[in-house]
Length: 156
Image 1 (cartoon, rainbow, N blue to C red):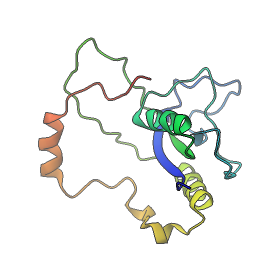
Image 2: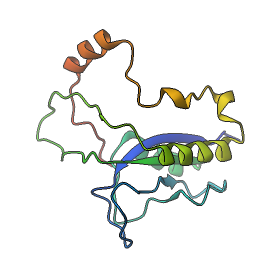
Image 3: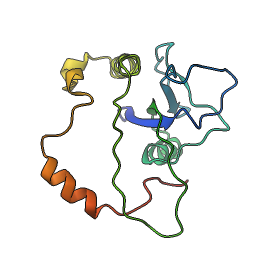
């Protein structure tokens, strides 16, 4: 039996369509999982529901895992960033969200990771105090940023 796969990604809560009105900065962590997933998630994490769409690598991996009947879950952290539509040709870009995710979102993700893997975060090498900090390799980042090409999302 294959171990379950867990992916952490983001979704734009500004573009998310929901039947419930919410305060903009009080959005839940959502999840997208394969039909074979049986692990219960904390109640604060809610499904990523239609008609919404994610077009990131996480969506492609979950779709492939569904086809292969492998358990996979994508935890989607709410962000204010709205991805631009795909351009007609690849463009150069550099992505960075200046605002780190909120503490409530991080705690919900931490609870979900612990419930899926049934291990404490410390055992997985998780260090919550580093969330939102800039990398110390700024020179390498700035050089790499100028070499990035693409639209930043994947269409399924």
